[in-house]
Length: 89
Image (cartoon, rainbow, N blue to C red; front, side, top):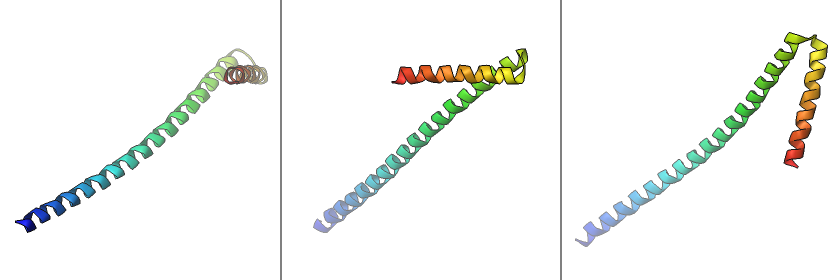
């Protein structure tokens, strides 16, 4: 009887350790997925910014010459960057 109880205790300990390892693996995987999701969100924001810049560029190109449009866009981007810097600072 003692042997049976001892075997059951060892089985429970083994099951506990296995469940703990699985939990730790799942936690690590979750952290990796969170970090990956954050990287993708940053990439999406950067791509959306590039899309907006291209739309703006195309809007200016449709109404004026290439050089003039590029100058206007560069000026606007510098002004926007200054505003962002002021808001962050």
